[in-house]
Amino acid sequence: VVYTQSEILQREVYLFERLDSPNREPMKHLKAICFLRPTKENVELLVQELRRPKYSVYFIYFSNVISKSDVKALAEADEQEVVAEVQEFYGDYIAVNPHVFSLNLLGCCRGRSWDPAQLTRTTQGLTALLLSLKKCPMIRYQLSSEPAKRLAECVKQVITKEYELFDFRRTEVPPLLLILDRSDDAITPLLNQWTYQAMVHELLGINNNRIDLSRVPGISKDLREVVLSAENDEFYANNMYLNFAEIGTNIKNLMEDFQRRKPKEQQKLESIADMKAFVENYPQFKKMSGTVSKHVTVVGELSRLVAERNLLEVSEVEQELACQNDHSSALQ
Image (tube, rainbow, N blue to C red):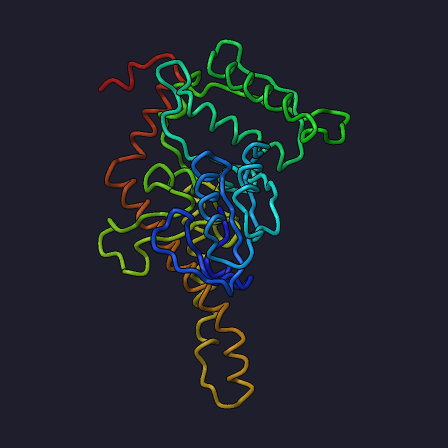
């Protein structure tokens, strides 16, 4: 989803604080990088920060388009001239996978109508995505859905208003933004899923690529929360869309590969060359050990839940109800 703290540390960023954190100490020897959404509340926090700056220099990055009036308010607050840079960096959404993003919104509609605040947030997220992809799309929406139509109109209004930002090079086939109403398909969300990522999401829950395993019987302290990220986990990247039966086979292969490497890593260190080779290979070995433990635990818990809830039998009935007109065989 985002950088881990260890990855940010490699970029020589050593302190992480929120603008709304109380009792922050002045650190004039440090430079500050501020990354925030251009909301009214955040701009006000930044104004207060610039009036009493705690760092020597500020580099400010907004995750979406910021209004000229807000920029003016920041400039007026910067009496000590500590702001070195203000930029728009379009990332006003959560990138879950390379081709999947989320706004982490729940209950965006009231009945069949948009919640105004959620409509605004969804519009902001979509337009930020388009700007980061450098796309000015043709918009198509589901005609039978009033929420889809309303969202399409709001996105179009932003594109028209910020036409200079959306002035990208034209392509022979224009990109298409297709807005569909999820409630139009009531069956699919009710079916049990049988691919790795979907099963983890449905049975265990995924929150920003984090999995809470604290309720798993006999779980070790190190595995109470794990991260499943296709960017940093090769096994997960290769298996996230495979069927559960295939995952079991691949987990076994991963374990066998780990066992083959393990004796080599634990051989006696009899020379400086042996010690050097061990030090060079240890991080890779440790990473593989963590990967094996994580996925064995996750797959084991999925298997336990499938058996406990009789999901194989339930899924068979679901498929019959969804795909066949004669439901009499499912009524027992």
